[in-house]
Image: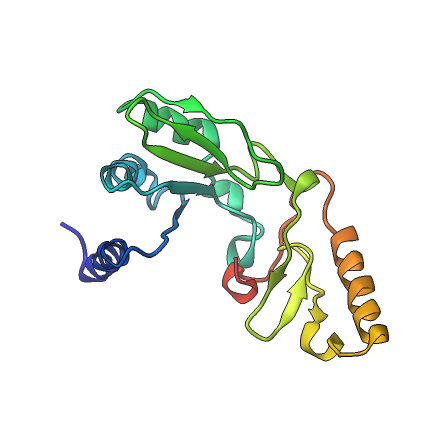
Length: 188
């Protein structure tokens, strides 16, 4: 059976669907912790018409230097799902972090594979933390103090444009380096 905490999560998912709200379901896969839940999570999402995305573990936070010990790569995720259904890859949207797949019944799932299929080269995302600091990349320790940079004059707006261009220029061209920052501190 599930834990009471898990029941609360699944009850929340059901309530979100009943309310007709948009829903994204993501699951970061950790070796030794939840890789055996890939198929049950896929089946749960597929039965409810939810697109689930499985994430390869990112080298961030307390796992920054030991991610390889826990990493479950895209080929293994696909292999596990292939034990219960066939699927085909969908065309990857430009600047998308995920590759999506569709089953013959129309169920969809995605994989964010920053190790197996790096996407840094065409990532166009910026992240803002709860304090209003804007980051060009999840692996950057430097962020722009955005509220302080905002202003109403033309000069202020030009300063913001320059700062945004600078953040976009800092994005990594090939592969994610990682960070000692936690994903939750940046809004990942």
